[in-house]
Image (cartoon, rainbow, N blue to C red; front, side, top):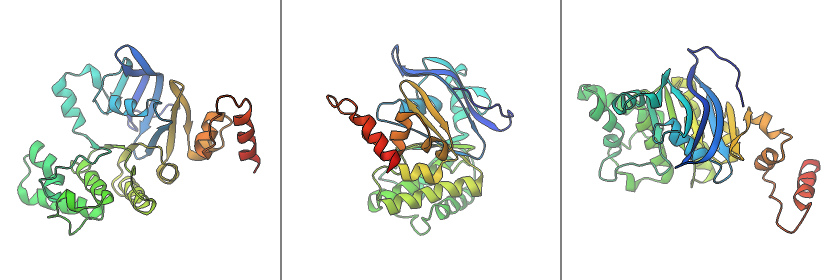
Length: 272
C-alpha cells in the first residue's frame, strides 16, 4: 500500500517494501509506510498480525528481512552499530512492562538517560526531570520507588523517561495494556499533550479501541501478512473490508462448522 508523497522535512520514518519476521519466514511483507512530524500513528491488528515485530524493526531491535527503513533521514540498517545507537538517541521508547528499575527512585529512573548519555550539569538534569514529571502528572513523586506506584503511574514515569532526551519521535508498546479505563484515558491524554505541547511524533502499538479512537491521527491495520488499511479512524471504521470492519466493531469471526454465520452477524451488526 502506497502513501501520499510528503516533503522530506516532514517525514521522520519511512518503510520501503519492508518484510519482517523470523529466520526466513516473513510475518509482514511489502510494507510501505511514512510517518510525519507531529502526528500520532497507531499500529493495530489482531494477535499475531506482526505489529509488534514491525515495532521491533522500526526501533532498531530487529533487522527487517527485506526492504529499507529510513529513520530521521538515515537508512537505519545500513549504519554500523555505533552510528545506529547514536541515531536512536534521537528517539524514545516506552515499553509495555514500563522497564523501570525498582531499586532507583522515579527521578533517578527518569534521569538515567541524561546521566548516561550527556554531560549536562546536575542542576540542569534535575530541572529537566522536574519538567517532564510535571508534564506526565507525577510532580511530588520524585523520591518514590516504582514498586510503590500504581500501574498507570509507572507507565507515566516510563513515558517521562522516554521523553527526557527531547526525542523527535517516541515509540510506545501497548501503553494502556492492563490499565482500567479511567487510568488508560488519562494516559491517552498525556500522549496527546506530548504531541500538542512538545510537537513530538508518536508511534503506538495497541489493540485498545478507546485509545485508538482518542489518540490516532492515523491508524495502520495489519493483517494477512500486509497492511490491510491505513487512514483516519473514521476511514477504517467505515471500511467495506470485512476484517477491518469486524476489528473496529468487534464482530466475532465465523466459527468452524457454521457456514454463513459470520456473514449473518456482520449484516446484523451493520444494520442494527
